[in-house]
Image 1 (cartoon, rainbow, N blue to C red):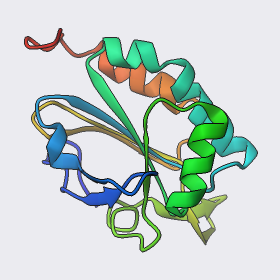
Image 2 (image 1 turned 180 degrees about the horizontal axis):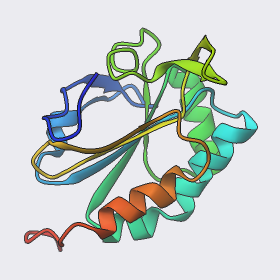
Image 3 (image 1 turned 180 degrees about the vertical axis):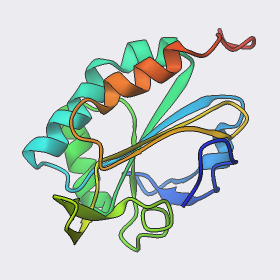
Length: 159
């Protein structure tokens, strides 16, 4: 599992359109990653829409938003279209990123680990360093992302 202050491990996953997206492609930009359990479920929809609704503020803070779930590309395509989501949704059905990053195996009251993706948040700086991580974060991940971004100076090359 990545640790705060260390380089975020690179990964490559297809987005909702099948285009491969690599984390390292965003060096020089800040990256907000959030994981959700299942496209279209009430909690996941609320979280995805919260990031949509704050997308301009996240962009103004020099950040790129990416979401990750174990859903199929087809499910993510439909979810993106139905909810008018302005960011890429990455498909990880093999758990190639979610498991090593500690987001698979949602905790139930701290007693039982369920075979589900935990709602999680990572903030990665422009140098690829993990600066925030919240595994199993309930609603409010977008506010946490904005809080963290608000502590950072503007990027010099931001337009």
